[in-house]
Length: 100
Image (cartoon, rainbow, N blue to C red; front, side, top):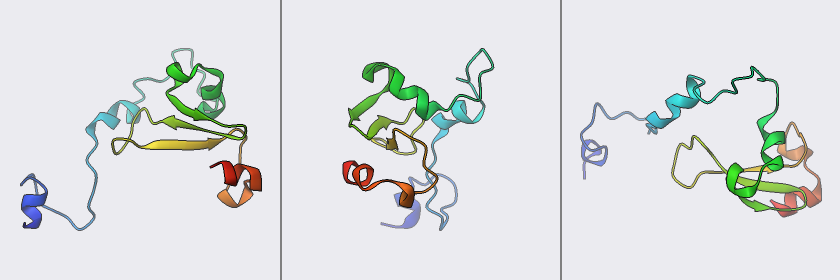
């Protein structure tokens, strides 16, 4: 199968293997931004406060949670988040890393 056939013949194939995700435009344009102007709240701190169904949480642990991405690049894309802010994966505790 040629590269053009693999891409369905749409446009010119490129070597970057870009994922076209037009549904992400709502995120990029701020379509679902809070109406109260509260842009400073960390979404990853707010998500665990919601019910699993409302927040799209698929698993909760003592130290981390897994949540479906509202604007995924690929089907099945999950975010795994620590319950606290960390700047780098190496900043996770042993318990957090094991739970992930």
